[in-house]
Image (cartoon, rainbow over all chains, first blue to last red; front, side, top):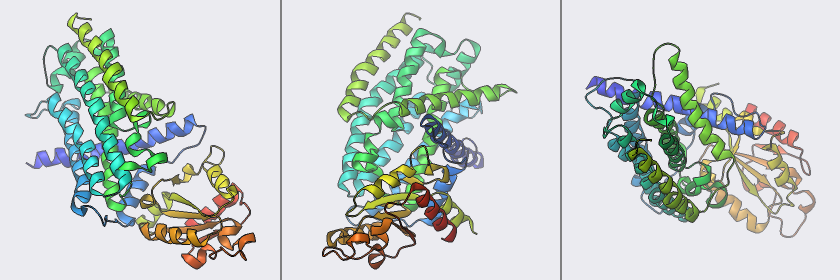
Length: 310
Length: 137
């Protein structure tokens, strides 16, 4: 029991994932600043933002709408993100528990934050938040199908093993899955799915700052918004970590290999940041057809290639 | 200086309220966020929703109609909120001070923490004003 609580709250769970995620968020902002020839924020900026929201600012409840759901939604988001982080990071750090990291469980847990944002947005009673919520819903319809095709590809590559432990071991004994044509295709599709899951720029229409002024988060302030930031930090770490586990042979924690593991995560985040900085926001219709037609097509081609053993 | 106020100082999120402005102050405010001056160095971000704001920047002369909206925006903001009046119109009324639709400078409507005069103030002056605001708050 105590060990499980430690897993949840401290080591691969809440504290660890949130700290690493906050540093990755700084990395993202710094790279953005460098791309735009700016200097960028200091290293501890995400922590200042989080503690300011949590400790200093007042939390305002909506007058029209449901205050209880409005406050519970960010907590659900943090719980969902933390559970997913535990189940992804335990196999990655090769900590052996009874649970082996079933990919389908991880898939369902990763959708909880997005759904909680929708619930919170619709509970706030703000029309712009409702627009953002409906956009987020359509976006989920778009990318979830593609994401499950990516997971299906990984499972097929690993000879029908669903657990992350075996997937990482198979890659570490042989070659990483990204070292084949189908692996590269799956990697491209997975990067775009993550971009949509994190609501980064080409797919940030749920929280479009310039048109619907933060959309789903428009009514959040103070501690509730701090919880949303926390969930976002955790997601920014665990989704690249999931890609590293599924396609790039996970972490190897012996000596100099730790540096290599860090570089893999940073590389994936760098790809996300560069995509976010070089693209305009697309319309929700374009995003859905992008995932439903093109990304699904690439994923299916990858599945066929895997069936032929490429 | 406590931990709370240190975090607050290090991460000021700005919401921009433009009254009946001639847009020169708006341009200079946006200039502060461009690569040359880059206020994100100090953790200052421009946010879209007043619920996320720590600083309310007000510029332009405040008309009778703007007055209601300014009051509403101020009441919607989560406290503590700092108010900065930018430009001659925001600080005193400038050339509109005697106009018939003018509803008073910003400090007659809501409490103001810092004044940045100028028509329009240079970005350097805005940054200097923000630094003074941060050090005194």
